[in-house]
Length: 64
Image 1 (cartoon, rainbow, N blue to C red):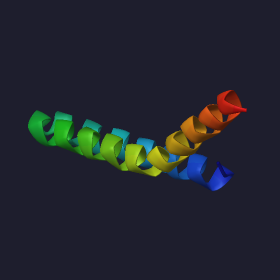
Image 2: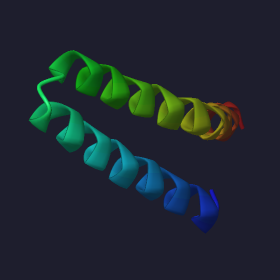
Image 3: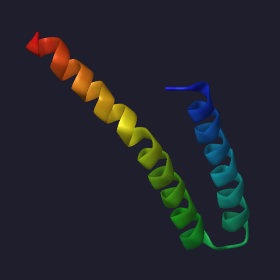
């Protein structure tokens, strides 16, 4: 996992937080929820390959 991925996750977190605060203060809580859900799904799609590699490494470790 590179440092670039950590910076991308942090940038998405900051952007989602700002957008949610703006939407909540303007009375659009539903859109704020959808923005936070979209941010979560985006980050999870970035992390799924790394989680898969982790499980493969653990499986290889215990089959030896």
